[in-house]
Amino acid sequence: MRIPALVSLTLRELFAKAALIILAAISTLVLIGVAFVVSVHTAPEGSSLALFGQPVSPPLPEADLIKAVAQMQATLAGGLFTGIILFGIFATAGVIPDALEKGTVDLYLSKPIARWELLLGKALGAITGILANVLYFFIGLWLVFGLKAGVWDPRILLAAGTMIFIFACLYSLVVFFGVLSRNTAVSIIFVYLYLFVVGAILQNREATLYLISTNVVYRTVIDGFYYLLPQISGMQENGAKQILGVAMDWKPFLQSFLSALTIFLGSAVILRNRDF
Amino acid sequence: MTAIACEELSKIYRSGIFRRREVRALQDFTLSVERGQIFSLLGPNGAGKTTFIKVLLSLTHATAGRASLLDTPLPHVRVRTRVGYLPENHRYPGYLTGDQVLTSFGALSGVPRAMIASRIETLLDLVGMKEWRAVKVKKYSKGMLQRLGLAQALVNDPELLFLDEPTDGVDPMGRKEIRDVLKNLKSEGKTIFLNSHLLSEVELISDRVAILDKGKLLKVGTVDELTAAGEEYRIDIAGTVPEAFLVEAQALVMKIRVEGGTLITEVTEAAALNRLIDLLRKHGVMITSITQRRSSLEESFITLIKREVNA
Figure 1 (cartoon, rainbow over the protein chains, first blue to last red):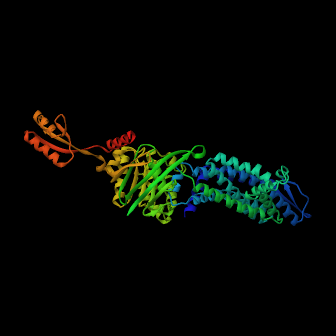
Figure 2: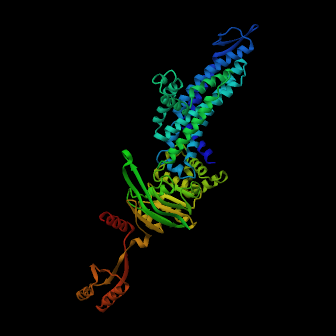
Figure 3: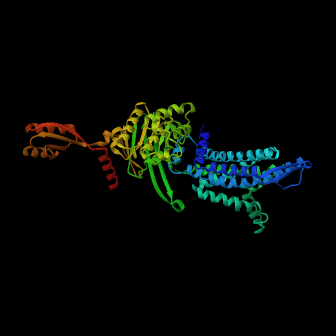
């Protein structure tokens, strides 16, 4: 009852800030654009994919057409997912610092709510908001390609689940920096820094950080950081593979889940010891 | 049956580099509040009043000591289902209406969904906010926010209510209404713990009062106990005081001063007061009234704090 109430309050907060509405509006524009741009030309020798009415592929047998559509869906989903992640973090990062503000946190914590419950409820609220947007976009994409190209491939729907999982793992860092700094801007900067700089360097550590030293301890520490933090790009690559129907590697998902859980628990411990 | 009990409770805030700067917000604070009372905690700014409530509600961790709420040792999350709290500087989400605030915080307090609607109806009526229920909180005045805050604190029908400056920003009529609400709650057997700067109000409704300064408990007692100004009596007389009376009274080592038609005396026992009355009668002075002088709670408070500062 208490965690659902926190989720509901957080969703109201996100709607009030118009964050979710803006995100849904962007998704709608993309879907409308795709619906206008993409079509299929059917000829006796096969169907070809067309953009703006111009065929962009030779006439293809049905199996190849499905592959071509999946490729297009993966490109669109990848692009918009990056957008959703960036905007989603920007839109929801304030949820934790706002809840911990003087005058607000007193109201929450004077209720029979444990501090970890407050964090969990707030994080779930933000993730649910983004989930609604991701589902809206992916179901929309599935419908558009189904109606326009006659390709009803359910893998795109499964990819929505994967995408939200990736967002949830990344959100553990938002929670952590939110608790630590109690400042939305600092929280956003650190998460973006992880996403674009630290995460990317760690992902390619063999070609970057390993070059600095061959010391075993140094490399173990670098590896430790890599496995301790969510592997966003690793998971994202596998999300694209899911849409394309290529075999996925589940290791980054498992590692990221454990890492997100550890980061969340760490945030809860920090919050538990704090005076308000 | 105690509503609040604490023993040698201390809270030290540490700050600065290496956390070497210390502020002792509470020092060996021992207090017990019986159920069904209105108990007020008074003290100057920074005395530790809000810290005390925050420690009891586990918003802040005690550095040392023990405490319990409603006979449940702290810290204990679920005991807060039986507690209500109106913080001093509360911030309700501005995008919610009054109705939505109470629904949301009712759910957070663990009020069953089926009961929330009827509870809100009663509370909005109680705090006089029915017409504003559908208006967004960001449009509320300070006084209206306090009324809503009081309703929020009562949403779970708590046994123990903590109110930190509940009448802050409320107009005189509103203050009277809040006082009446508190008296009604007391008659229902609820315990009310009040932090307030408005000593005249505290005096009107409190059963017991504690005075706190620099984290130390200076005095606890009923309002009568705190406002009794020693054994000082006012004796109103008709006419003037004869010189012979004054000479004889001073010979009896009585502290007397004359202010117009009133004699003010400090006596240590009732027998001494009676001797003085006998002396007045002997000199043919007509006594019209005798009253024990009381200071206001404000005077007692200021005297006590000044004494502490001088000490």
